[in-house]
Amino acid sequence: MSFNIALTGLNAVSEQLDTVSNNIANVGTVGFKSSRSEFGSVYADSQAMGVEVLGNTQSISLGGSLTTTSRSLDLAISGAGFFVIKGSNGERQYSRAGVFNTDNSNYLVNASGQRLQGYSTDAAGNLLAGTVGDLQVKSASLPAKATDSLSFVANLNADSAVPATAFDPATASSYNSTYTTKVYDSQGKQHTLTQYFVKNADNDWTSHYYVDGTATGTQALTFDSAGMLTAPAAPVTLAVGGLAGGVAPLSIAVNYAGTTQYGSDFTVTTNQASGYASGDKTGLTVDDAGMVYVNYSNGERLLQGQVVLANFANAQGLKAVTGTAWTETSASGAALVGAPGNGQFGNLTSGALEGSNVDLTAQLVTLMEGQRNYQANTKVLTTDKELTQALFSAI
Image 1 (cartoon, rainbow, N blue to C red):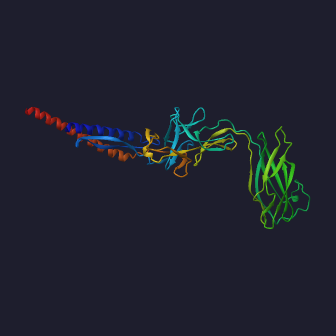
Image 2 (image 1 turned 120 degrees about the vertical axis):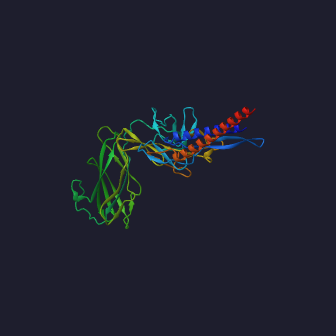
Image 3 (image 1 turned 90 degrees about the vertical axis):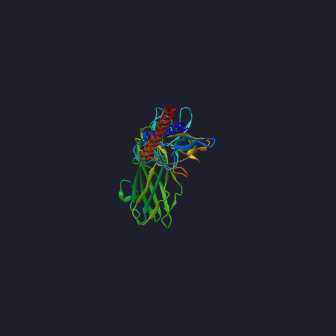
């Protein structure tokens, strides 16, 4: 009986040493979660029969340290949650390993070719929240976009005097202030929109528009006694035609909301025009909210999608596929999916990776304990053998 009991001890310790060895081997594996062997006594008819390994439990909820890599597609989760990845067979897995790249079809994938899941965007770059699928980025150049809006906020100096001469852009004394905005036509060519502000009377101004030095139109600006803009109350449309090169006419909605007339110097706080020249793809970035952007050489960026995270009512119930990937089970419950940083989902850090959560010191201590247990069980076997030989010799 003692021989069989000691043999079960050797088998159990061997399994434990396998687990410890696997932990130590993966001390440098990104997103790895350490395991621990759980022992249990074996009984038959209330009589002890030895020991067995009941199973291995992973420390899924224990995070690893974050290491900065400065690589835009290296992602780390601080807090709860898992990346959602999908293989070619359609099976979804959940992982904390955030090393991603783009494949030949510009899908975001891990080293095994599994595709990262998230919210996609429509053709206009609007996020389609609620629909989770493969994240794919656009590889084509960004076409030029004509300017169609201008947000302009300024303060016109209420202390300014009415010019003594009729407005003439060549005569500085005929206007009170001026400001220039860069705009783009349908082919991405840059033009200069200049506004000349002329005071007509108290609370009454006129903005004269010139595009590339050619008069384009005027717009009256009126203010109340407190210096707040009263007209125009809505964006005004500036039509610009006759541009060279066969481009389409420009129609720019100019919004003066927030413009004031106070007794202080002329200042411009907002001069934001839409439109841009064409650009080539220069790289990808992922922000802390999981938004994936393509960067272009013209300084623009276009939203491609948003990385989602998954969480579970009982993460310990997940089934381990590898040391860094799991699948859901009835014990874990169905995956709850959402954006990083919201509710029960942890924060996302771009340019960093979560390391293994293996405590090397603790593993070495466990290794030594396992070695002593192995030696003790071996000693039992040796002693049993010696007793048996002595018994046969006596007979």
